[in-house]
Image (tube, rainbow, N blue to C red):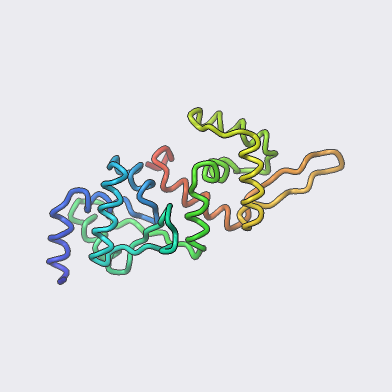
Length: 194
């Protein structure tokens, strides 16, 4: 496809334009659905269409769930043109160098809640209380939090912080976990930047 043909094809669909504008970093169909107010199925369909046009590609193709999609070089150029025609600033496209399969794994509900909430070293019980305070709809037990923390530590996303003489072990994010947390917040419709 020529650039003109590609731009015309993208502009034929409001959903394609919307997804391209909001795809400022690699995201899942569910994350895009939350940002764009498209139904999950529609968001997934648009990502598939953009993939066939080689504007996006799956960054964790072996994943069966939580597939993460990012713009290709061609997609970034097209996104820039779409944003200009809509009167928007070019906007940057964030693509940190991370293990996208691991990132996709962390996007499951309980794991994502723990990572988003772990802004400082916390004990699992305190972490659970903060999750519930921030997201009253979250159904997560203290055992769920402990299990998730163990998994995150095993995969290098979180680490224990040793207490003083009488304290209990607290947990914090590693550098990788902090990058994941930032990506999750930038894809969250409840984030203040949106």
